[in-house]
Image: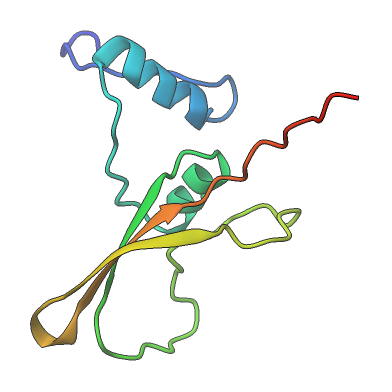
Length: 117
């Protein structure tokens, strides 16, 4: 159906979506190298777990919502992940009604260098 309607698509993964492969194919076939991810907690968590999040742009609107079962910004991370993903603050802007726009860079672990013996 998509081919008949000349709609582009990407297939990546046999039984589930392989996000790394999908993103690689978007770059290779369509020249897309930057994505804006506006998903819910599960899709955000999946991209984070796949190492595909470089930056977090977060709007903080003043107000408290303590309702039960409200989705988080990032959900579904593997229980084997024992540490939080480190972030580095890159900018803060204050907007109308005391809303804050925070931007963070995801800090990647540095590759360990081996000292020759």
